[in-house]
Length: 113
Image (spheres, rainbow, N blue to C red):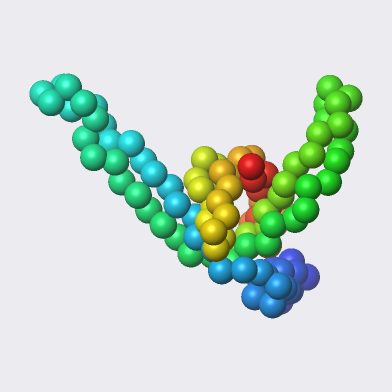
């Protein structure tokens, strides 16, 4: 077992202990139907996961402006544009970062708003 496999197991254990049950919902618009002159029905796919939302922390971006970003930590790969639902709160998933020093994904981070 490599050190990265151990990190992956540890990250999953931490999310099981400290994470919250959540769901990611992806809505895909249907294709345009020229006969009916409107899009066909959209599809909704929901995936369950464990997630932790980290309190926004200010940082200086590339334009030397101080901004606050809320970050989510996930045990499954989030999809940019999906909706994260935790209890009665929801966020839109933005930029996704995969911690993957080898071909083994260890954990996922995503900006949420």
